[in-house]
Length: 282
Length: 283
Figure (cartoon, rainbow over the protein chains, first blue to last red):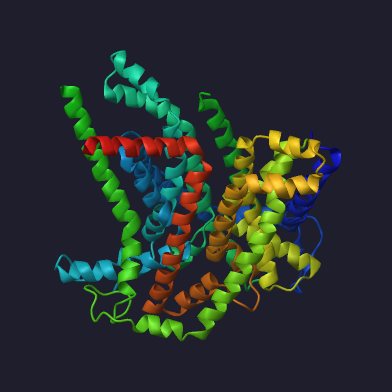
């Protein structure tokens, strides 16, 4: 029913915009990663693999990448640990208060990321709320120093931010489980624990995969929480990229690291899409 | 009997866990708001000398309000771009077949899941290559591009539920595509479009990772706050954060209402049924 002209009119403008502002920039990032910087601090458009060689040879790059993945993995684990039982409670036990609780979970999502990271900084600092509280009730004499400027602070803050993200797809998956499947399992003599592990959990796996991917990918690329709360031991891969793009005019190397991140993230997305398809029952 | 006590125990553990998670989610927000009234600074327990001084300081703070104005400009412009390209993109995905459609769909949605640093840096390289000077305009282009994904997903979901018969009738009765689009398609997609606009606006007001790389001389509000955080922290930041929180809260309640309405009568019918049940139980 839609004419050719209509289809072109709705397709061409977004296609053009997305090509110019998404596809071309990604391709440019690809090109930059094979270029180099001359003595005179200008970018030389000669194609070589020097940046990638440097990535493999200098320990700090791949070690930081591994540390970032380890931080992201912990964030993902804790977000699931907090998010899954909450989603299960809301979907199966909360009854009429479901809508209210759902709104309570998504409200923090709308609170500025920066504001929440800042709030944790005021809580965890050596003269912050938590340390002064502990001293006020005489549980500690001196401030606990590991709380702020540590990987612990980064994991805690990112878990706080991504728990709601992880919750959403899990909750959606649980809500889509036909309730008569659960009843059938009960009627056929399964205990509630068996029903949970054999019916509810397998059917919620697409949601878990989507939520875990969100948490892992977004925390892997974070650079603000580490800058604000991480200290030297909490530096992540994006912080290195930021510094390469900052004062030091080393864009090509920065582009090479970014491209590695991009490839890693896109392959994770691809993998999670495959997993979600494999486990979805409809 | 034993099954029902087991269920009660499980329910109790799960609700305890839920309380703990909510405490974890809301503790920083509560601390933030409480200490915006604290005369003694951002840390320090217990809070002492409750005061409105930080709010007074905030209202007299020129650079903060300049950055708020900048952020508002950016958010409105980004909203316009994201809707102008996101709505047609949703129509294209719903109705047109063209080579590279699958790639196009992935590309549009990518900024939603990609860490902001990648979107920001790749655009920075583009602006660098064409020699564009960084300014609010480059931030607008960045936000607009990244948030097309939001407009497209929301409107595409709305299109899936849309009955095409009305559009067909309009076309049969002699209206052209342009008239049909404005008089039939858009009014039918009112709720997803308003919902998307609200989301885009809020996300843009809060965005920092992309702006971080595209910033020129003028700061947006999150970047202004960021700059101050690096210099040292005062409860003035708590005060401005509290105000942002209140605005976000209003926006989200509004959005949720829209969402419930957009999800159609089925949802509302269940709500009505629940209400009737409650009435019955009371009698």
